[in-house]
Image (cartoon, each protein chain N blue to C red):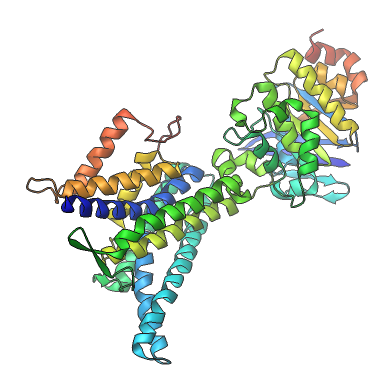
Length: 310
Length: 232
């Protein structure tokens, strides 16, 4: 029973982290019909920004204050920096790699996305020298609390609440603000949206900004749980989040969130299955699950009826 | 009010509009009629800023607006009801109206009331998703949505397309009513009969060129127009 509870907690928390990445995938798809393959790598870069900005700020601040105080002050500042820089990165990627291809076939944009993904990974290798980097301990989040006989990091407990809160804010934004209305309109019909006076490019930029901001928050939670960052660290969570978005019905935000929680939970229960190699095959299981769902529900749990060829 | 000079538009190597010149005087209804592929829609899309012209100028009240982006055109006071209506199906009727006023930052209350007075059917369906409306109701919504930007000129692309004759009559009555309330109208139609009866002035477009012009009445009684477009 105790084992069950802690597994469930880990599953929900992993799901919440996937959800924050998955929203970025699903929103960009909803508006551009593009699978933004670089999104997982943006998430990884957010992690690296966290590492470098923390050490840089710590060094900077320790010149004017005591070392412990400097570390304590550096963390929240660097979290803000992570958020800002990741948003700038996401915005910049869209402007440079996707916007010039607005009227090109979708396949070309997708190849551009794959290119950006490798560019980010290679740059990360260049900067880190390929060495695994360790994510800083965020006070509070990294502290542990004994629950059901195991000690669990606070991040595991807090993640689902934070995710639900962020999703609620996001749905309010999309359903009840002018910019949200414009996003829904642009997602349906570029040309008619233009006739309403909507600037398509600013709406698309807004989408990337929101997606990147959520990925930045996701990176703080995820890398606090799994602190080693290598240049490919974004690939697996990115892929899982993408699976979650497809699972929930790509283009649908609630779908992506529910899909992500389900995948996180399933994954953690597969890990404890009582046969040899369960932990090794966990990712294969995740994808098998996706295939089964898509056989019965080709558009995902909450997907639009019309199918699009990728 | 709106002056088009020597407008040429190319679509992927093909010249769809081959140098047309016409004028839409203030508070009038002007119609462009012609067969499929004559360049009517292309002309409207170019004025709306969706397509860039290869040659020629477009002036609104003396101001050159050639090649401006669609949002700038809307802010100058030109709005377009697209062919096939294109209401946003997932947005409610009210949201569709509000998005029509996207560039405005003032109070919309009076204009929403104005549109609902013009189209009482829309008021009843205010909270319905626009996709659930009938074709005629969607056309009303598309017109109402265009009016929400408080346009000087409303361009309409084939408003009668795919609608029952009785509904078409209603739409044209509304066009006249909107015009009476001060909105200048540029109307593109294949339904030449209805369009010419409604319009102050008509232009006949044939494969990218204007071949004939006159008042609506003159064109209605013109032998060539009768033969080619009115089927009598």
